[in-house]
Length: 169
Image (cartoon, rainbow, N blue to C red; front, side, top):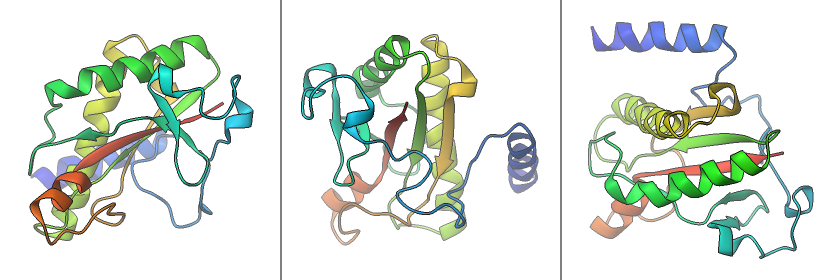
């Protein structure tokens, strides 16, 4: 039943132009690669606004949203990250956000992919509730494919259970 709902959700989102998976046909750093030069402000000046650049020069929220194990419920600590992202998007009406959901490597790969999609949509829904238009938000589930830490330790697994928000002008 749950996988049927997921398949329908993917079909509806695909038809509407939304992406829920990182497509292999997208060259890295991808559609949402953004250099700081694309935005007003000197490199590094985004920190005061809760934004930063990642190692590839993409503009993102300074902090990721870290989720509890096997949960897509938005943690209370996510409020400031969502607020920072919403404020940025309010100021730049033509910018869009790519919301990347991730998981640790515990459990089945497909279950982790499903969970990462749910996490990305939880953050998307919070941004919509904050007043950001849905068409400016692209939730993407990446499952366990892009760990930032070892899945061999509890701290590493915690770091991998995240949603990252990237911006493109």
